[in-house]
Length: 274
Length: 257
Image (tube, rainbow over the protein chains, first blue to last red):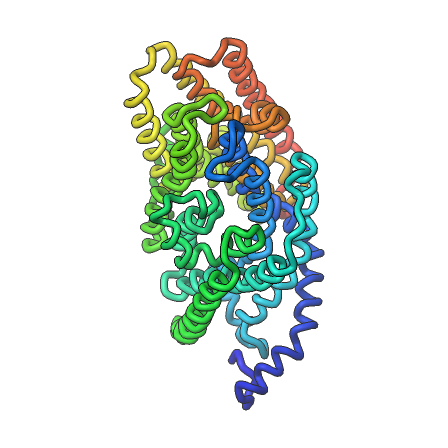
């Protein structure tokens, strides 16, 4: 179904690589067609700014554990950007297409629908970042001293860590979306994950300001790897090598799990008769 | 009232049909309440005052925000969101032919039962904060309740206005997410924000009315002019949105014609 008939894994991989640029082009065109909706989606993810306001007011009387107002502005500005860089919507799409049966035609395409969605998500990234620029610009005007030039090492670590975080965030969403193969509706599970994630990913509070006993645990939990890790790598709050290693570990584990769940889920989907 | 009760019964059944997801939603309610309060505890573990509010006082604001959130996600969002879909698909026509005032049927047609956890969490947080702050004066409680009601009414009016734009521009459902995101700013005392944002949060998107004002009323810090302004905002918002709704319905020609 979702594979090129009679092709081995290597030929299939080649097939994906050959098709990739065209998928990106198509996906980007789709993004531009729905630009108004995309802009609203991006602007809806402004919770880091709400968090910044609280910490900014708290640090008004002096630095908190070495974090002054500039440090908080930097943290939440980068946080805002990484949140967009790692954004995807595959959990909504899977929920919808599994329940409504829209998945069936997608399975007939010569490419796995998940791979296709990953390409689409990737193609949306430039657009997301462009929409964010005015917001980041306002932050820079509000607090010019927060502008900074990262060292080449931190920048390189940030690129790698963001790429890992992007893949991880997408894998997690795909996994939660696939629960719908069994329960028809899995948005409740996703919201539960999101609520825990927001706390432990560094979305609300920099991990460095957690109670010391929790920091080490939070660093190895999967939540941090999908958001806080790239932010802390860029700002020098986390060691590059070990952070990337933890992310790579989660990437391998969740990648494998996603492949397994997809296989048994798709069998179950066929069994429904759709 | 009977009509409303019947509508609510149906929507509770609708919500529990996907059972596993429903159970998860209950967990979500508790978790997100914890998520909203947790940053406050982390901040106040290090500083005693933020923008003139102590931890217990700020928790009052958070509690009212949770109450308000439960109301919006339980009643306002499912109903007014359904109008947008109704306009696009034509399902709105079935509501318009019912012999009850249309604003009642479109505003109280559904309820999202999972919102009850937000409401309970809000009551618990407010109760906990008051237990430590000492009981408020009776008059202050009445004013606080009035402010909460005024804020909810104002929010309902704003949502109705946004939804009414769907009669002209069919695809506005995403605006709801934007509105939801902006109201997230109400979870902290309004004085943590800069002047520009503060003005926007009390007038344009009146979320401060719902969380900060009731808390200030309980703490007896709300002066009369602010309270009066909140009530005026609510009245203007309610009357204005009803006028816009009736106007929009008059020129609504249904999806099929």
